[in-house]
Amino acid sequence: MAGILDRFKEEIAEKTEIDLSKKIKVGIIGTGWIAEAHVNAYKKCPDVEIIAAADLIPGKAEAFCKANGLENIKFYPSHKELIDEAGVDAVSVCTYNATHAECTIYALDHGVSVLLEKPMCVTLDEAVEICRAEKRNNAVLSIGFQPRFDENMKMLKKICQSGELGKIYYIQTGGGRRRGIPTPYGTSFIEKETAGIGALGDIGCYSLDMVLNSIGYPKPLTVSGYKSAYFGKDPSYEHHDVFGVDDFAAGFIRLEGDIILDFRIAWAMNLDTPGDTIIMGTKGSVRVPSTECWNGSIGGPLVIYHEIAGNQVETIVEEKHNDTDCFDIKIRSFVDAVKNGGEAPVPCSQILYNQAIIDGISRSAELGREIAIEIPEI
Ligand SMILES: NC(=O)c1ccc[n+]([C@@H]2O[C@H](COP(=O)([O-])OP(=O)(O)OC[C@H]3O[C@@H](n4cnc5c(N)ncnc54)[C@H](O)[C@@H]3O)[C@@H](O)[C@H]2O)c1
Image (cartoon, rainbow, N blue to C red; front, side, top):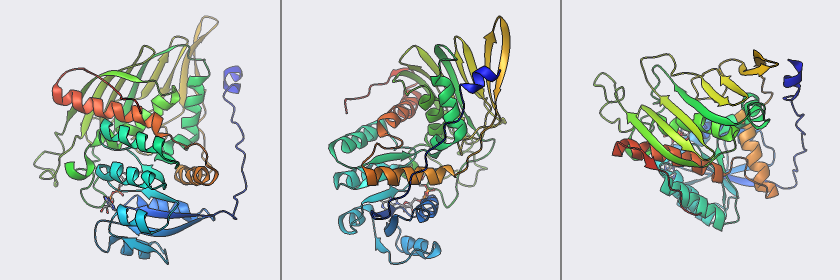
């Protein structure tokens, strides 16, 4: 078995020196839950100065910065004033989903680079407008999928790209929690006006990115989608009166290259897991033991099922350890791209397809039939 595993040996990442002669000025837009993780990771970058913060809720940005030990910060009542007045090179857009598009487009159109939290936005139309803004401006846009930097996720991609699986034709992915509707600090994840989409976008985007990134992001063609909200709208649930999104969604998606993607995702269900992720190929298949899919790692070693000299065998790929926190790498790689004018670590051109599937599932579910996914020219 050493033979096949040798093909997946780690590449030693080159550690480059940080150029301290060039510093970037960063602003935080939206000072809620995830903003703290951004600040903590930026603090580890000696070439970054956080100089501004904005939040729609009066006093929230000030309290956030105080709590996080940030000093000499300029405060603004929304993304617009921050981008117009603060003199930032880059911003982290940490707002709820419904304002991702307007904050990102405004920043890019003012030449400010953006690290945009996942999901990219709510609708495909918004995703198209974000991609167009990225194209017409000279600024970096990266989407905040930290699991991309997880060593196990990188290994999964390596396996899919290695050719060992042959032609990939069927994928099952998704996941979820038995009970886990997120209301960390209020109800911004579950209200229609702020979240726009529920489990489908919140954690569904991760599972979709895991498999689509592994196989090279083929274009989605058609989708038959389903969504429901039985748990969120149940009168016994404390926030049922404001629950306005899905808590479960599923989709059957045709991808370019004759690949079928079978997807399901839940914030709540009467089940432990809706199944492992499996990627099936003509020469081999890989199983990714399920996780709750909110941190993007794996629930156990990857297993490759294949055939050697007429024997049906399994190759177990040892679980990898991450030396650096994936969130820190997400921030560091964005900072490097801004400083060096490099390519976005997680480009919007890929996540456009992720958003197209989310949007397609949602629209197909509302129409009650399969639909074609049409992505306009960017
Ligand atoms: N990558 C991850 O691991 C991860 C984890 C949690 C959340 N997220 C994502 O981060 C985003 C934010 O989540 P959260 O839990 O921090 O939400 P939150 O509701 O706690 O905070 C969002 C904040 O944005 C502010 N805001 C909204 N529009 C604004 C605007 N135009 N200008 C300035 N401020 C604005 C709101 O007032 C609010 O305080 C969501 O899209 C979520 O999916 C990512």
